Image 1 (cartoon, one colour):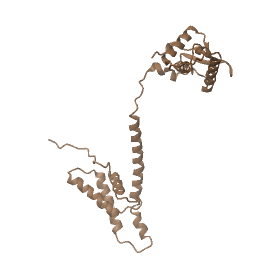
Image 2 (cartoon, helix red, strand yellow; image 1 turned 30 degrees about the horizontal axis):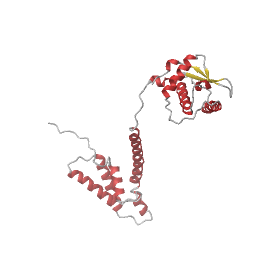
Image 3 (cartoon, helix red, strand yellow; image 1 turned 180 degrees about the horizontal axis):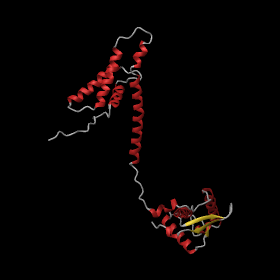
Image 4 (cartoon, one colour; image 1 turned 60 degrees about the horizontal axis):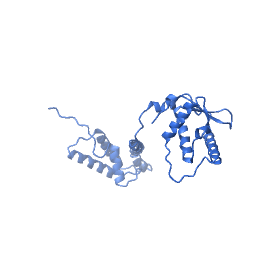
Amino acid sequence: MAEQDYTIKLPVFEGPFDLLLHLIRQNEIDIYDIPIARITDQYLDYLQQMEEMDLEIASSFLVMAATLLSIKARMLLPRPAVEEAEDEAEDAREGLVRDLLEYMVFKDAAQAMNRLYEEQKAYIPRDNEPELYANLFSAENPLEGKTLADLEKAFARVLKKAKDRGQLLLEIEREQVTLRDRLEHLYQLLCRHPKGILFEDAFEDCCSKMQFIVSFLALLELAHQGVLKVTQNEAYGEIYLHVGDLSKYVRE
């Protein structure tokens, strides 16, 4: 039977730079001033433990071991009696430090992306229901030329007129007003008035602030679905609600 091939993944470290960073942090070493002799010995000890466990060592770890031994040998060689001798010894580590710093940048970026991935896994996307979202991508905007401030002012006028004529009643018990009911009411109102109605007429049957608010939300939802369109002929003029595409109405 042929010997099975194994894909080697070290139990803790993904690669030689990962192991080096672990040793540097474990020894609380300044990455710009690495004691090559100590780090090299610890690195080789780790590889020896892997061999004793009869695990195959990836070639990249062996290449790093050779690099560390080369730097160690250069730093142990007798130094020339010149002023640049100390700088030359330091230069032996520059390439290693530069590669370690670059590895840290990519490692941190990978960890940040992994955290983002884990966070996004906690969200459950809403089912794709074309009939609910078709109007989002429509070329025609049902609120063309209108702003939230325009609708807010119009709604404030509706509340003021209702209060002036005593349409708003004081209630002791909590009132049950559902968005579904108000959607159906406004839909039927539009069906009865295909030529359109005044914005204020949409709230004619409301007797409490809760009914006004839920009716306003229902109005926005119908505009979002494309069931109605909002128009205003002139600045500060009356706002009208016109019938859009009634077939887009969604009964939840």
